[in-house]
Image 1 (tube, rainbow, N blue to C red):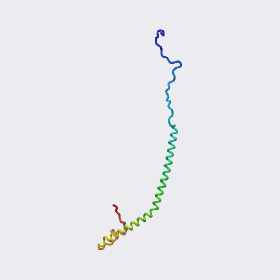
Image 2 (cartoon, rainbow, N blue to C red):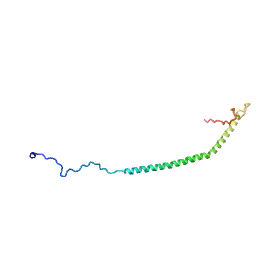
Image 3 (cartoon, rainbow, N blue to C red):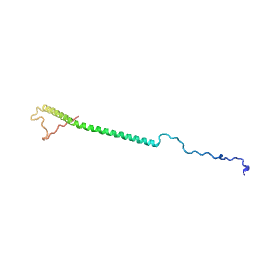
Image 4 (spheres, rainbow, N blue to C red):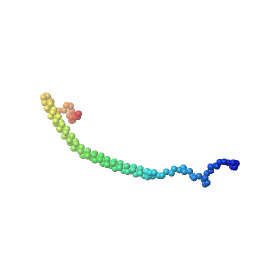
Length: 125
């Protein structure tokens, strides 16, 4: 049968075909996974360190503010008492001037039927 064949069959080359490259051959780009994890851990540690230092500073400032208020309280109370005394004295003088023609009016007498001290109420507008 092969005597009357007029075509040439396509055959592999001697020794066979070269192997087919099917694997990816990409170069390594960027840092490795271990380096990335180490960087994240390092940055997180530094961040917690800074947060801790900031918390200590805020705590110290709050303590300083509290003690400054404690030390200033007596002076502020004394100033408030002096202001209250000055206002009550001015109010009494105004009352004497306004009610001088009213018979039986006692300036400074409480309008309430009680012996207990009731401070004046201030309305600020």
